[in-house]
Amino acid sequence: MFLLVTIGAASQYAQAANVSVNCDKHDSIRKALHLVAISNSKGPSTITVSGACEENVVIQGMDRLTLITKNGASITDSSNGSLAVVDIEDSRSVRLQGFTINGGNGGVLCNTASVCYLTGNTIQDGGGNGVGVFADSDAVLESNVIQNNGSRGSTVNDRSRMVSSNDVFQGNGAQGVAVISGSYFGASNSSFLNNFVGVEGFLNSTLRVGGSTISGSGGDGAILLAGAAASFGGTTITGNGGNGVHLEDGSVAVFFGTNVTGNLSGTDVDCAPQFPITRFVETTGGITNCVESASNSRLKPVK
Image 1 (cartoon, rainbow, N blue to C red):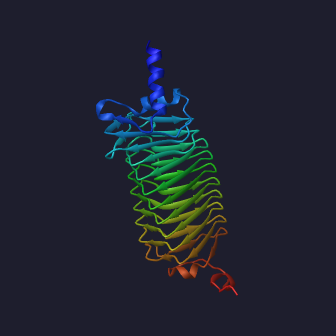
Image 2 (image 1 turned 120 degrees about the vertical axis):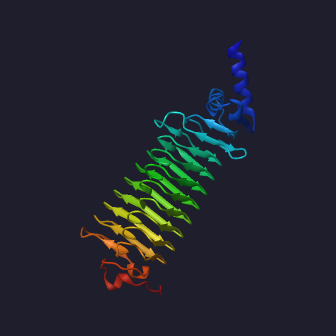
């Protein structure tokens, strides 16, 4: 009898356009996910959440799934800091919208070739990364606040890709965003404020930062190491505790309409001795020790 009831409940969850979970009434996201999973639904599935949830959520092998809040729900770590609050594994088109996500070893983990969309969330106070994007995964972030995490605001690693629009990465204990091991990060109109380092690229990664602000870092605003390449377009990099931009080890920085001034080391764009490359550094308006040939340092009209 119990098995029949469970299968029937799962069928209702799978067919519903909008499944509701109220954590203040002792519902749980995990239970709703389990019922959707055992129904073998191919989606799209929507779970609408209200209240203050205290749990760690694992989304494994599920596609076309949306978790959205009703009146600003929260999900708070219940693992005493040992697990991610929301762990997305081997899943495509998973959407997380409108939550406050508190604590955990990480706020949101997008892992193992997953595709994740994060919109309008506040991800804060974790011991690790606010958002981790690993192992050939893709993440699209829009209008989130990622703040006060003990490590990085976000790590993009292992050939993964993350794009950010109108997000705020602030007050994180390490980098606002770190891009590692052949990964890609693109930012448009996002802010990197009062992190230890604003953004960092490492090990042949690529950064495209446009229309953004990097300010108030305890150290450098941006760091490029070990063959990383970055372009900064229409971006302001100012008031950082170290250099505005530091690059070395064969890294490349290109500047278009970007203001890099007023950084506290006394050098706004700093080229370490080991084979750095800049283009159009003189357009930043700041102080630099980078040397580039006259033929490369001035923008020329296309004829």
